[in-house]
Image (cartoon, rainbow, N blue to C red; front, side, top):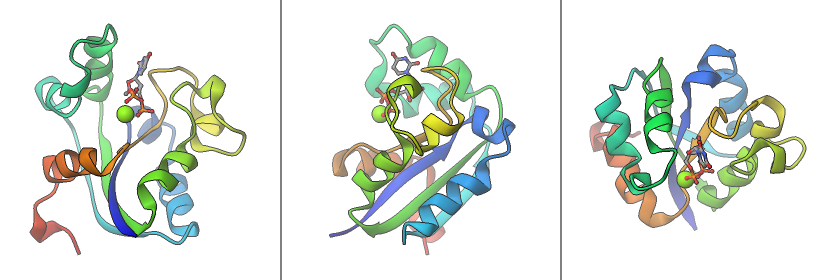
Length: 138
Ligand code: UDP
Ligand code: MG
């Protein structure tokens, strides 16, 4: 099924100059970028985005990290893109990430793991409109 997912190159990914590499992996997998922009989140913006994790012990640190510098948010479209982007990203903890995944290649920390991808259709319904209006999606 053709789907859309929300992906983010996190502040560590922007600092490591891997924006292009992340986009390239998505495009080479046959997906289309239908919306993209660079943003700098406030702590409150990051807290709103990760509200689902607000009871987790890492919430404060995660939202501090996500607001420490610019990020690139994008909407990626294609067949089965939600699960496929998660596969291209690799496991949350880079130590568990399969070889050749973005996190295995670039992450150095469970928190600073380069990239975000929505985990379900329900998540995309919250995450895509959090950053994009319909006018901004091609
Ligand atoms: N995270 C963390 N410690 C943990 C689990 C997650 O710092 O023990 C951070 C990490 O940056 C992760 C984000 O919180 O990407 C959201 O966690 P989630 O479980 O949703 O992982 P994801 O869907 O990004 O793989
Ligand atoms: Mg998640």
